[in-house]
Amino acid sequence: MKSITVQQPEQLVIEDRPLPQPLAGEVRIRVVSAGICGSDVHIYRGHNPFAKYPRVIGHEFFGHIDAIGAGVPPSRIGERVVGDPVVSCGHCYPCQVGRPNVCSELSVIGVHRDGGFSEYITLPAQNAHRIPDSIPDDNATMVEPFTIAANICQQMAPGPLDIALVYGAGPMGLTTIQALRGVYGVKTIIAVDRIDERLAMAAANGADRTINNSQLDLASELHKLAIRPTLIVDAACHPAILPEAIGLASPAARIGIMGFSAEPCILNQQAITSKEITIYSSRLNSNRFPQVIEWMAARKISPEKLITHQFDFSQVIDAMKIFESDQKQCCKVLLKF
Ligand code: NAI
Ligand code: MN
Ligand code: ZN
Image 1 (cartoon, rainbow, N blue to C red):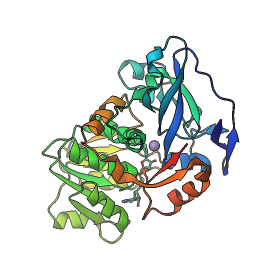
Image 2 (image 1 turned 90 degrees about the horizontal axis):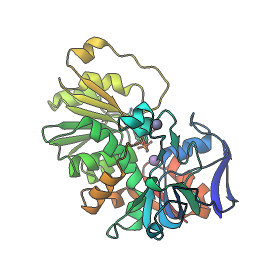
Image 3 (image 1 turned 120 degrees about the horizontal axis):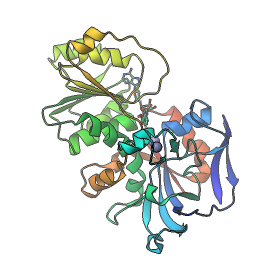
């Protein structure tokens, strides 16, 4: 089978690998379609601190089960499925409290173990989630990115009274905006980005108002509009954002972060405590696949709005280049296997 492997940083190849056989409790998926994510590019460029090389990348993938290991019901063969990249131990403290996404022995498909940019992949049977026939292949490929939004929303519990502010209108900000609008029905959504084309996508994905903070000072703009956000999601993940968000937030607001920057940022306790602000952090997803599949089946979210490009997997290097260099036109890129 063909697999897309990063042999070491900056060395991405399509190589022949032996067809993997599912172990007990595993299934094998014949991959049909897979999405490129910023973290795939980070592994390619050597900027992911968790990655081990060589690595087959890819953690957003859809396909059909074509083989099963011992103990897996034969009826699963032929199922259309998406793969949850979070592989956890099931018995550590985070696993016991329902947070396998931060398992002490966490192994992420496409990062710590071989991923879905491959004609075939094996994974634990419980990580392969069945997709109803009503959801087309391309939309199904988008389940994983929406689980990131589902995870942060699950923690922050958005509601109809909320005035939400979302920093960053990349795939993560856009999935969050769609969930806030289509699932949680928040009152107002403001999107903030530095790129006008991305802000146009934010509006098309459900933002009521957009602000380009490379042209306007965000704090004074919000002040002018008399807006005090009650729920702020940082999907841009620059270390300067959290201190700014604390300043902008309404009393009793919640702030959610999902960045991995190791740069320090300066916060002061008074700014947080005087308004009793809650700060959440969110990594990957804790068993959010069934929820997102329900959202898709019920048409509460529109994954097709994010898909801007498709390539045959043999064109992966071109696909990666467009994904990295054209943030104005390019959002989600799918590879076809
Ligand atoms: P992206 O790079 O496509 O989007 C980021 C957007 O933020 C861009 O449109 C950019 O113009 C904008 N931006 C950058 N600095 C800004 C600032 N100071 N103010 C306003 N906008 C700003 O990235 P993507 O894929 O949407 O991911 C966003 C972030 O989420 C990344 O940092 C990524 O590492 C993180 N992430 C975290 C996950 C988690 O589970 N915690 C999962 C996936 C991504
Ligand atoms: Mn991803
Ligand atoms: Zn665990």
